[in-house]
Image: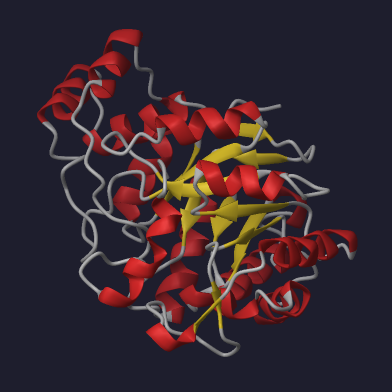
Length: 315
């Protein structure tokens, strides 16, 4: 197994750096161009979701690259996610994703949130009256059926707390291979990583730089004096140091930038070396929960205070 990949509990390997395709602009042409550029740079893991609106652009770009002989399908790892409005029928949700992408299967299909919404609810921030009671056992049975039907190679979850993971494992025939959560040097997810590690569930980090440049993010990570100092010593950038920290914890990282220089910078984190002293300095940074995941949960917006049980422990 190559050093830039991790083996999951389902038996397959996954590249440790993935390109996220969530974008407020959601411009199809820009997304396709970014994917082609990423392939040239060596990216082989691509992350999308129904709610991102980027499935068609990503699928089109990957299909074009495959048909042009620039990459083989088996060398690409594609992740998408079940939105809350499809919890009643994950199989149909995944079939729609595959139709959107023009693909026969995904490599990874994740439950995007432990939240069920009414059918056809399609806003990234749902209305209060769109929430329904979640029957996680029924949802997971549908995810396992997706696996049985060969629609995906692996199944997992996203934004699940330690307690939600334990609840899921009480009835799951197939354990989740991945739990994708927000994680960076200022939200280190120590407890959650431990809980997932106990069950051989891989933790994948989104917003591994704290979401700089986004309305819900912050530059606290890349502007940290400690991280800047380490970057200077290592002849690297603060972003590379923060990403290497995440990789050092055994996690994969999903980076989100369509800027060519930043894309090159981000994938270069794989080759950066940090010593134990560097990592200890980063681990002593004050933790700040900069965001609560892709705008679904907003502490200042009353409908989502009902979701506080999602954050019953570290996530």
